[in-house]
Image 1 (cartoon, one colour):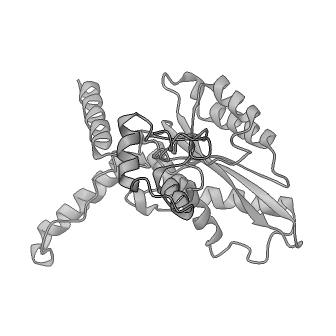
Image 2 (cartoon, rainbow, N blue to C red):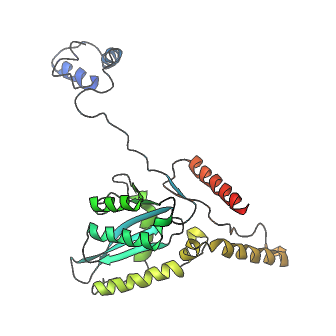
Amino acid sequence: MQIANEPRFAELPPARIVPMLADEGTYIASESSFTRVLRAQGQIRHRGRSKTPQRMRPPSTHVATAPRQLWCWDLTFLASRVVGQWFYLYVILDVYSRKIVGFEVHDRDSSDHAVELLRRTALAEGIHALPEKPVLHGDNGPTVKATTALAMLHWLGIKPSYSRPRVSDDNAFIEAFFRTTKYRPQFPSKGFADLDAARRWVREFVSWYNYEHRHSAIRYVSPAERHAGQDRSILSRRHQLYTRAREANPRRWARHTRNWQPIAVVTLNPERESVVNAAMTAEKESAAAAAC
């Protein structure tokens, strides 16, 4: 213990102490013996002034069983025809319905734009009247974590959530939307002529995405239909159609018909199956109570 606590060794683990002593031609004990003695004295956990290494926290699980419960947001660059000039697309997406509930395009990145988008989106979605405000998930960019943005979230009662540092897929829903945007055949491959052109294209694209696009993750209904609660009746009619088709010609159906059941629960960064199961149970109980 006296050797291990000398000033030159006080901050070092046995794995470093033993080789240093060996270089001086001194052998006192093996590394495992140093470790055993230090552990007995309660000094093996962490030595030195630096903070104890900690595991990176896992992503928080957020569960949505209806619209206006879970949002995600981010911004992406839109190229212009001028080299070095960019436009900035800000988007807020409802994770449950996949509907774009808010968007703006600007010629510079500013937290003021993000704050104004939050305010307008909350007003349009009627957040003030909801007993439970939504969670808004974003990355760790300076725009979405700015003091003004946090102040607006607090004023609106919206709970912020953030991705893990240096983990790009913690905000997968919004990144998938940006990919759909930029891989759209009509997306200008040579950039936008000016800000008005970028705004006009994005406005038309979001309209198509919300009202015409049949989204594969929500049983091929449009985000607007799911956001309005129309997906259940649409999927029910599809199921009835397939059932009648199977009854009319059963030899064409080797097994069951296509699954047209609505997606009941959507999770952001699921950690445990129990979280999803609990949300599904709560959704079923709520539906049963409403039916009574």
